[in-house]
Length: 149
Image 1: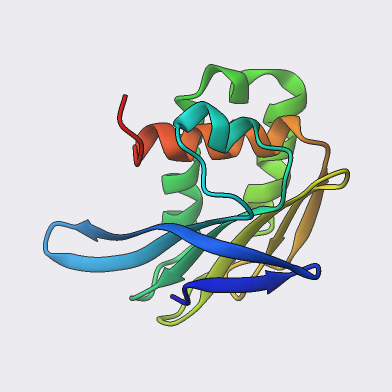
Image 2 (image 1 turned 90 degrees about the vertical axis):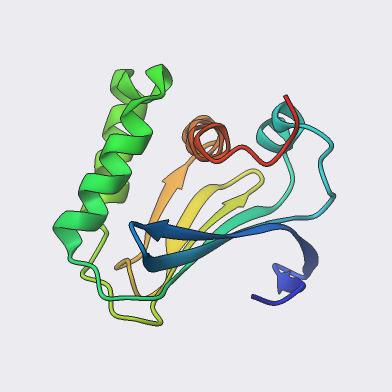
């Protein structure tokens, strides 16, 4: 993954990158890009600046496996069970596809707009507002802690 990205005319810096394994198989690499490097979990989630979670898949995964994994991880966040966020989650999940090795899933929060989902693992979808993006980033960063607690 690159050390920085140009998105919407702004530079996002790589703030974290991690390999996800299941048993002894490499499944994907995920990375977090932000305009400013956060110092804590709350700052990363609350930031109203451009930010991105980027997944690069290292093996083939079916849509059912991908959806099941996302649903399991995101449903642990009580906020995702609220009606409005639950509907947004279903919109995100319905955009997902079977994944081939090398495909990407890119989740970009655009301030004043919302969450933009793109990459080969998704048909692409836009979810307006900040609340769903906050809940998604919160769920991910809570499940995969990168900041000292």
